[in-house]
Image 1 (cartoon, rainbow, N blue to C red):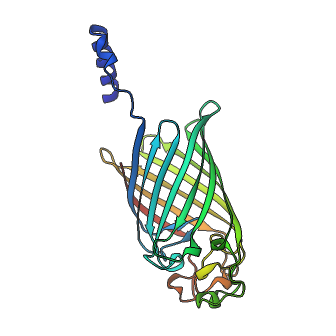
Image 2: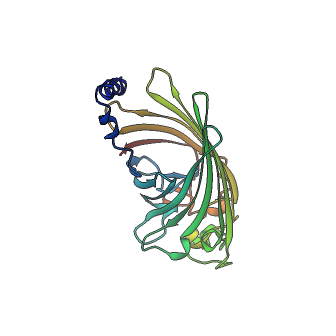
Length: 283
C-alpha cells in the first residue's frame, strides 16, 4: 500500500515538473546483501555438521548488475564436521546469473569449501548450476553440483574406527562427487507463511576421506526436507522450521562409526530424522 502511494504521488509530481523525473537516481550497479542466523542443527545435505547442536551462521553477497557475484558464508562445526583448526566452515562463492526463457534464471558458479587453520586436504571446490523459475504461485529451483576428483572426496579408509584414529588403508585417494537437487516454495495465503520442500541425491565415494569425513556418506543416498518460514512483520527476521531426513539406515552407516554418531561415541546416527529450527536476520 505504501509503495503504491509513493508511485501515484511521484507520477503527479512528474506531470507538474517533468525535470524532477530526470533527477531520479537509477538503481546502483552493485548490491550488497546478506544474513546472520542461528539454527538448532546445521544439516548439510541431510547430515549434521554440528553434532546435532546449535550453529551460528552468516553470509554476505556482492552482486553486480551484469549478473556477476561473489560471496562468502560461514558456520561453526562439531563432531562429524570437525576438520581441525577453528572447527569452522568458510565457503567462498563466485558465479554469474542471467535470465533464460520468459521468467527463468540460470545461475552458474563454484563454491570453495575451506576450514580455516584446519587440514588442507579437507578443502575442496564444487562447481554448480541452478535453474530457477515460477509455476503459478510456486517458486522452483533445480540444481546440479559436480566436484571433480580431489583428496577431500577420496575414500582413504573403509573402516570408521581406523579412520577416526587417523589410520588409512588408501591414503591420498582422490574421488569426485555429484549432487542433484530440487527445491519448491510457495506462500500460504492469508498466513504469512511460506511452505518449502527439498530433495537431493548424492553420489560419491563409498568410504571415509581424510580425518574420517565424507561429502557423500555411504557413497549414495537421498536427503529431503519439508518445512515453513515465517517473516516477522516490520522486522528483518524470519522464523523457520523444517523436518530433515535421509534414507541412510543404521546398517548402511555402520562402517562409518564412530565418526558418524552423535558425540562420536559409536551409537546413534547424525543422519536420522530431525526437526530443525532457525532464526535468521536478512539485510
